[in-house]
Structures are given as structure tokens and as C-alpha cells.
Length: 437
Image (cartoon, rainbow, N blue to C red; front, side):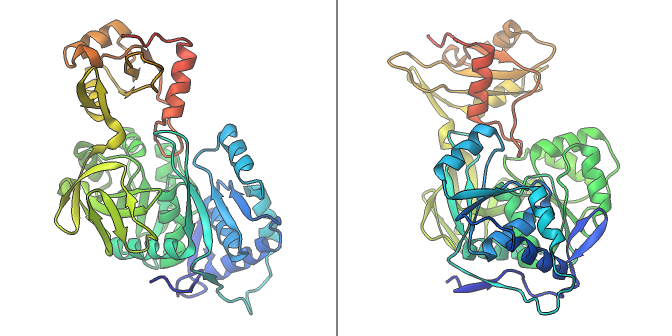
């Protein structure tokens, strides 16, 4: 049962840090002053598009919008088309950027005497998060303050987030994974967060060095691969968390060796939030967070207002564990023959000279037989060589037409390759691809 009201901040000393900016701590008291200052400048709209890139400014904006009875819109992409679509779908909306928040910070009261931690209604829709769009158009998912606070409590219990822990995150706070681990964790557990969003390996190293120990790195497989390849000396890290895509045991082992720290994974989805975790090197089973039940691929319990059907095929292993078998959308049936995009991508990645690549099944067009498409990064191979290598591994019906070589795959802020971006890239490379059998 979610309480009728829940404090914005978990109990902790007001002089304890909630964030670190430019190497300096920002106390929880200062944070409350900043929230009060921004509340006074919020535009009169039901929805506020939170576009802040600095993580502390996002944190202040997120809290101020909720404390003022408004709802944060968290775009899955900063692409102009996506933002225009949100403005059209939510006409009673406005937006906040880093520069707008700075004005509110300047208006903060000089001392915090009299400031108290506000309570927020448990049923208030604090945010609307959007799916990544990896399999189609982004879909809205309303999140109440009670659901977010309950999820944060589960994460605190699973990962032992506590006062003293400092979180460094490479993922954007607008993404559900980034929201839970780098925004809700400081609010609900007393941990603090580094204000930046490092991208390149040396940026990650510098951010970790600037964050007081014990420090936790929240990131993605794409960033972990880059960090391992960089061959840098890493500051002592308490543990690492990875999500947004499955982490291979090989990369997990390399990461643990490089950082001398355990690598943990979170499994979740925008619809339900984080629901399970594992240490990759301990095996392929995921352990559910307390309170969740999984039956026939449908998740229920804990803070979920209604059951959620998972987009992945899973094998249930008792009451609390499961294995991932692949995404439902990955299943491919062409000319009566079945396979999965995961299997095809694996076969592609095994070709010597292939850095990375993905298969894509286009939308149906009339009665034509659909042919798979592929986008590949392989600097030393041409298309003919790639198709010949694939022909040794795949049934002819699964050979891609066309196969397009690129310098890099089009990844979004969380390292995912979305269907929309792939189709746009293919359309640009081959305006009228021949998809006939």
C-alpha cells in the first residue's frame, strides 16, 4: 500500500551532501533552497518538459515541478521532431532548461531557517517517462510519486544505497534507468550524485576522481566497452551498475578486472521500472526485487498499479528468479522459416573484421515477401565479403537485402540503436532499397 503522502527527501541531516558540483558538495539544505527558488519561477502549465542536461539542475527542476503540483515530461530523445510531437500531444506544457534553472538558483533564499522537507501526494503523477522507441514510436508511461518512491526503496535495499555513497552516471536523467539510479536514489536514500554526465572514458575517470568514495558508476555496456578499451587507471570504485542492454560475460569479466570491482546489472522497462538484478559473472539468472511476482511473462505486485506484460520472453526459475530468452519482437518468420534477430546479430558479430552490426525486419508492404536489412560497422570488409561470410552461417532467406556499411551505428543517449534511427539511416543510404525476394 502506497502512503497518502511521502516526503521529498529521505530522513538525513540537512548539512549532508545531495550532490557534488565542481568538486564541491551541495547540501540538502541548499538543495531545498534551490527548489523553493525554482518553484517561484515555474511557468503556469500542467506539464513541464525537463530538458536540463546538468544532473543537479535536473534534480532541482524535477523536485520543484513535483512540489508545485505539476508533472515532469521526460523525453526519450532530444531530437527536434520528438520534442515537437510532445508539444503537440501535451499542449498545456512548457519547458525548463539549464539556463532557466540558473535564474531560480540565484533567487534561492540566503538561509534555510524555516525551510522544511515538503510532503508530496503519493498519487501525484510526478513524471511521464517515454519508452526508448527501439521497436517503434515512444510511448508515454505516467509515474506517480508513490511508485517512484517505492521503486527507489527497493533499489536502496538491493544495492545498499546509503548516506556516504556517491553516484556517477553516464546515462541521462530523463531515461527511466537514469531517473531511478541518479535522481530518485539521492532523494530517497541519502546518497549523493555527481552533477555531470561524463561521456568519453577520460571524462568518466575524471568524474569518478571528483566524486568522494565510496563511489558507484551507473552506466551502459557501450560505455563499459569504451572504458575497458581505453586502458586507463581507474579510481577505486565500490561497484558498477549496467543496464539498457544485456552485458556479455566476457565484457563483464574485462570490466571487473579493469575496475577491480563487481559489475551488477539491472533489468527493467519503462512500463515497470527496475524489477530485477544480477551479478553478470554469477550466472544468467535474474533475481526479482522484493514484492514482485512473475507469472507467464506478466509482472505484478510491489508498487505496480496493474500487471505489466514484459516485452521479453523469459523462463521462470522458481518464485524469485528468471532467465531472459530474447525479445518478443526479435522473432522472425520468413518463408516459413524461423529465427531471431538476436541470433542473426550474434552470427554477424562473429565474422572477423566486424566491429558491430544489427539486423532489422522492415514493416510489411503489401503482399511482397519481406527481406531482412542489416547495418554493419566493418572497416576492412566490403558488402560482397560480408554477404559471403553470412552465407556460410545463415539460411539464404535470412541474408540481408540491403546490407549497408556505416562508420558507426546511430545510438541514442543510452547507447541503444532505435528502429527509427536505423530506418532513417537506411533510407539515406539507399533511398529506394529493393526488398523483394
